Length: 199
Image 1 (cartoon, helix red, strand yellow):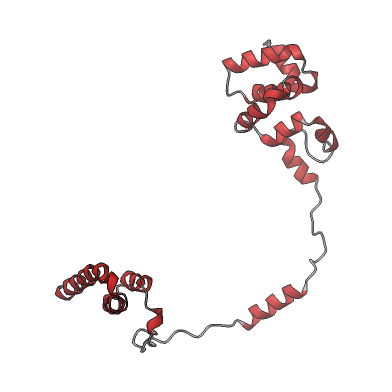
Image 2 (image 1 turned 60 degrees about the vertical axis):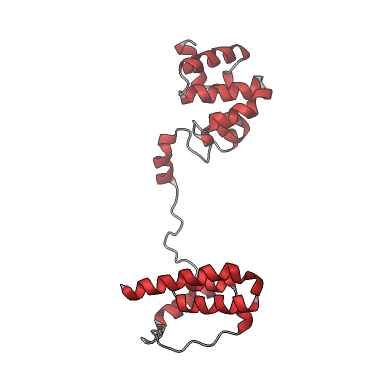
């Protein structure tokens, strides 16, 4: 692809013709990461080879600025938004400088929710701290119906091995056919308790 033609297509992509498709594709083989060529290739696929367009667009969209690609392919959108968005991405700063501030000499409206939040913050409520002896408080007895293997596993994770042993013993009495399954677990927990007492 000739340099002048590439510059021409970059400045005015609407001049893209069917003859340019092969040249863009050849140049893209030589320079596969050139974003300008990728965008022109996507535009030419959209115009001249729509059957390949969907598959290639997914690959191209990973490598280029998708908003620029969208406006390049869909020129009717870019014409409608030409006065809203800056043409050159580097002009974005000047665009922001021209834009009027949202709140200029006007106070934001306060809603009922804002007033409630402000009143709550002014009160500065605090939660009462938990008592220090929370671990020493007697636990409420658990009903036998709630004993399960899952509860025993939870006690094991909490390192409350004695409680887990009691549950396994009650479960082995309640389900004698599973006592073979519970016996090794009870023995294992007893070994863990003995090791902890030694240390």
